[in-house]
Image (cartoon, rainbow, N blue to C red; front, side, top):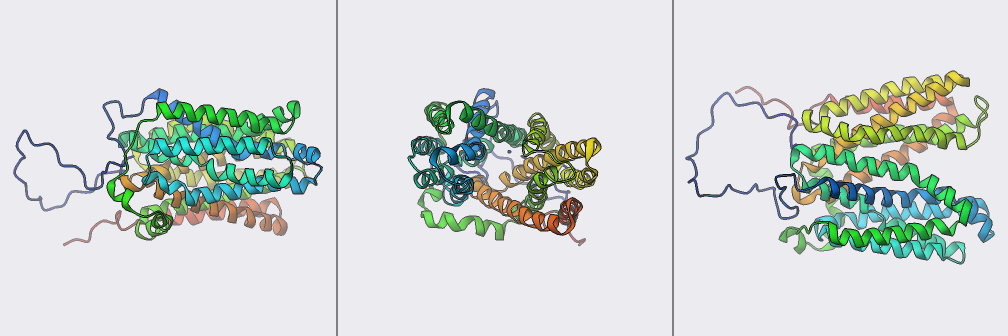
Length: 442
């Protein structure tokens, strides 16, 4: 959700000195960047279809735990006898916990065996979900929800694991497949939580999710291969891992590039979806809040597209896919502008625009993660922490700016903000990094 470089570097005009060939019996030297942090891919790439499907399901379940509470807030408020805005603190607590888990736990994927870390995280998530489902009042429910968010970062541990289990020319496809699972979990979780909650009460989604996660932990304990972190990673103290993502941002220009693309595109994406409810429930349409949920289901089409986008990334490299994603975001902003008209024509514009925006955002995510995972084999979890944190901050800022643009200029202001963020990212794309600049002539 890779080749180290999209294209081979240009050959120098002066032929390099030829070293004497190694004896036939000598094994090939190991790459200095390769470590025992990830197993070497086997002939089949080290990651079979069955295991990839299991990991995708795990991503869906983990991400779903973040979203199903959003659908049962009114049920919680009614049963516990609290105001609806107070019940919304459950969702806030889950998001705060998830942010903390990204910073505090995901970097441990470079220091601890992936299987051990995944099983422990899933088991703790299951226990926290059980505690939430049995909570007698809002305060313990919010506390349990924060623990759910803290531990349900399995998807961010799985992605670096899977990237290390396959050959570089398959990483884009694998990242895209895992992203399909995460998207499915996000889209289906609200339906699952709302439907089951209406039928059996708000506790039922928590209890069913707890049983599902605990069963998944047992399966993962048997199915996920053992990976050994490098000795250097094991010796490093835990506090050093908390600062490492910031150091990587300072020292890895391609990581900064990917973070910039993700922060800007996700910022525009968040601005649109934050303000879409205001547009649909406003005078231009006069629809209910359920219309936003129905429109969000259009994004399910991207689940089918992301594996193909990953294969394109493997074939052509991340940069062309990033370019297509940014141009798609710019085009989506223009199409979404037609939603200002209201009526059937406006709904068609909103449907087409949100679908294009979803697809562009997912394509950029696949390309960015493929680039990031190619930087250092021994630090993929820390790289992922830096990348996802920047993207999350970009989305938060985009939501804030979107609300202010909507208040000042209405829906056209939101579309203009999305287009501006895409242009800013395109400007960065067209400026080559030091690694991409051609060498000065001798």
